[in-house]
Length: 138
Image (cartoon, rainbow, N blue to C red; front, side, top):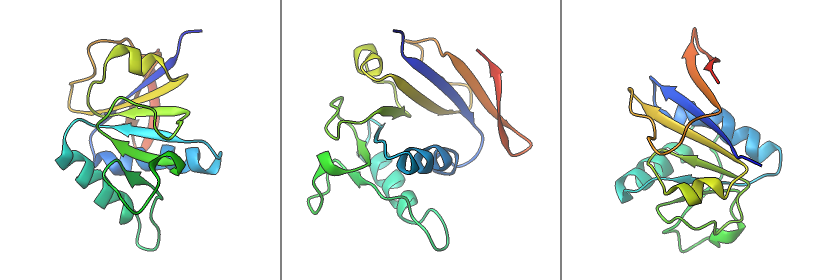
């Protein structure tokens, strides 16, 4: 079965755009890996998830955290193409290799401007219109 790959064109803060999907994943008792290549990106996403809302945060860990067991985390931010936390879903901001993407039944690619991943074709393409995600192509 071909994996489902969803592209999200983001015109706002990427973590704000990802947050509803991350919360849904946690609510469904599933797991996700957020893949980025740079250590600075890991730090930025980590900081943003801890301060997601005025009175809430999104539970997660990074590949660098020593206080948490990575394999036990519902959301893991990593720069390694390894499914350490046995994630159900892949969320990627930077382009991993195609084999890593295809090892998940469902993936979400968030990108700014007009620079989507070039190695795969999306099943669905979303853009935020009037504050709501709208499917614009599939």
